[in-house]
Length: 367
Image 1 (tube, helix red, strand yellow):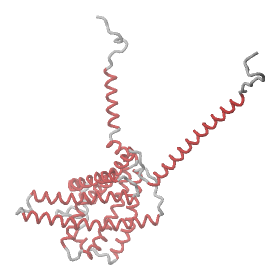
Image 2: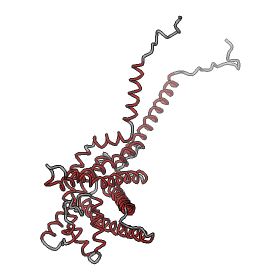
Image 3: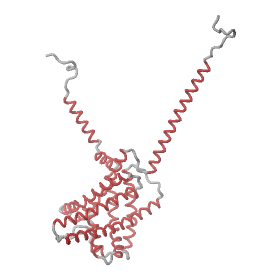
Image 4: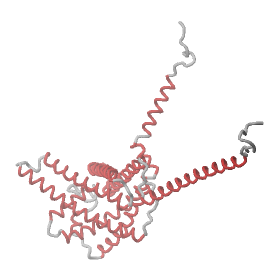
């Protein structure tokens, strides 16, 4: 049989085609947004930043609990239901921090309800809260800005400290407000169940109450993350991307609250860690929460890189200034080349003599 033209010149190469397909799939995977988010997080030393935030948050949590419950004791002293709901809300938001009915946890809730800020222990807790809050919020600001590759803020140090203290106070007030809203919501759900003549202890009712608490925690976490990215870090993030990134981070927080009990039980079942399982479980949960926080920041940062927008206002202004200077320089170069071209044409016209007319009659072409 006669071979077709080009058959000997280009034989079939299935191995090379498979390599090209593999490289194409690898390129698609490498350019996928989740992969780029993880790369951004790891490249910015996110695990190390999360570990530092965990160490700072541990001290701030204990001092904040003591001072916060001391202040809350004056505010909600006559409302035991609200105080109990405050304990439940914090226990749901940070698993392993406050002891539950089974005894799993670090802090005894009865000791918190009897806490007072008047005394040497309260004074030490207050000073520790001030110092640890400044350190924690400053660390979160620097960590988030590192993920966004933004320079250090140009705000004076004293103003940053006052802003951090204001945000810490606002965060404590938000916890009390969220606990109040959670109490009202669970009360409304229980009232609706009684109205429908349904038992509040049935599995469906317990699941409904649990889902209501998780939804409220999700909303609280989303608002806190949005304030952290926008106000604390001082980043200029478009509204839609800020909401999506905050929602992703809040969903990760809620998922950790669901599996936090499992982590604590797994840590407590280890005989090597049984003596201090509660504190180890709390450290693990806080570290995972900090990592979710920085991963949410990386998600927003990658999305803003895709549209070519910088999150730092000063950095964006500097970029626009550089672009304007480059545009003006380009226009100056074009104008300079145009002037040189006009000068060259003029010089050429000057060097070439024009033909002169002969004097004589009207017939200039006669010899």
